[in-house]
Length: 264
Ligand code: KIV
Image (cartoon, rainbow, N blue to C red; front, side, top):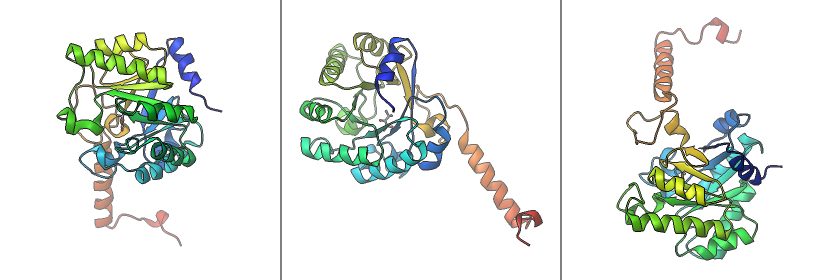
């Protein structure tokens, strides 16, 4: 049986944790036997898979559907985290727990939620109800309208102190891990050294306990998306476009299907 305690053990042993997003069944199936530590059905699904311009369009139903598909693909082999979408944890503890229950029943092992200020009670309630919770600080995209865009956070001293304070608070409330998004590497390193729980970074430098990337970003699905923190490990956009062009050419030239690809 999977347990988040193994992430603490790996962190204590100095081993880095690899985390990635996933939103669909067949990709999850490809991942399930790889040494990936955690998979996140992020609210980024609203942008990546549904074409919205921000994560605030993700809903409980949307996340639940994708969690169920990914869980079927992972077949219980990798720890699965469901993102609590915008608003789902700000209308009270009961509503938040109901959403978390849907995600756990759909196959997630835990939930992630952004920020802490104003919903400390929700984090505590989820943890005490038996839901493993991952925190998320720094750039919290659900608040991009109040943050003034998708910008690096924690550059100013008071902001940096606030992020550290919030991280310590999340740990105290019982979070099993936190994500730090787009903050200076030095600040992320300080937070990782002060916290016992694993700190996972995205745009937070190398001195944290692990990394997370959006799968489509690391596969190079959008050649125009080039944030500083991203290393594309493939050019999936070219692979897909070339395959489709070849298919179209073969169909037009009447060379697909050939005799071997046809039933007699
Ligand atoms: O939704 C998401 O993909 C995320 C990660 C970038 C951490 O929250």
